[in-house]
Image (cartoon, rainbow, N blue to C red; front, side):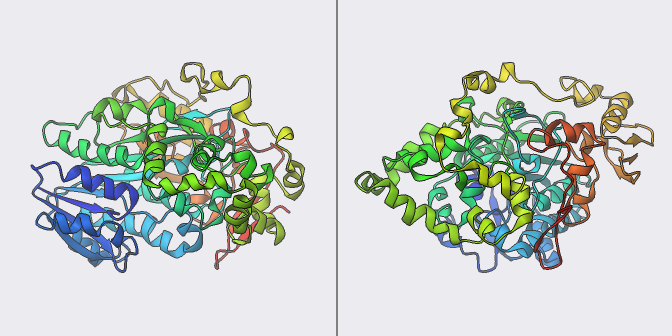
Length: 505
């Protein structure tokens, strides 16, 4: 038994390998390592201790010959390779090469192998785009409204669809929620990315260890029983413990508590975005845990570990918080990935996508008394209550077993999208011809449609046209208008040099 892993030097990948190594029924692990991987040093000791069971393929997923060398002869492949923010914001071609071209190559190679390895592909909550208290909970099937200018989510969107539409016999897509890992604090004080997080965004946090345990338990269980009708050819959200459903503000607050600080003293309301982020609480997040029993660690457990590991953070208690804010937080205003940089450099496209315009941003101000925090809302407990949440209209009964979904269900989904199903329904995995609200015809598996995919320009170009599409697409509109006005009419795009552009100024 040989298991292949990509992205093993990443946060989830390292933890997956640690847990997988406990399975003595796996003979070998083949690890795909990026040439000149800067994170290699993080896991070097782990490699040395287990070199008798590890073999390495060095290369790049964008090169199909490297992928062939890696994939041939494997029983399982776990694809955890990804270029994520902030690297995907700064190295856009690398994000395309890994998240999109790399997946295309991986799918192509596996399709042509005999026998084929089973593929577990990690996707992301970023596909769902911006969420608010109006619809904080969602399921696999929610509209995939990838946030404008977030090349990470766009490339992951396209890569995921390649897997879902592939001819791989055994595949599974798992959409990772926000993830807590031991390098998170250090990673987030070197870039303006921290300012992208909306204070009121619903975030469901798994830990890297729990996500790694999930991977190990999937393979362990699959080696013992047939999961064909439970797991394979399916898409899942990687949910977490209920207490791990918090907000962006809560997340910052938990971190600052380690140094005796608070978000309100370190930040001002106008430091951070009010929309165009990505985060969601998973209404269906228990499904994977029911199968693989991996949800172990709470947010509280994580911060206790960080505090113990980084005991020196306590010295922050003797430093004025205003000074920490100036030296650690506000120095990042000069970073070209920060809100203040966009504002000062009149990046109208990003400011509109993130706030609804310069004027809307200037209204926020610096007084917390004038800023509505979701966690301070008197109705917050009801908003967090999964039993009181209101889901959108998906066009079919989401509690229906997949085997019972029929032609009428798929037709209803297409109709809500402002389109039409043109072909005849055979089964969930036989492609059907659809027509979208722009009268474009396309082929797609009904199961991909159930997972939230629906052809729009984002799948073909570096453009985001959801203002216009939502006027005709009820499924898009049900979420898009939670944070956008109905009279907004902007088209966001990257030009050939990845400069941010906006039509409809």
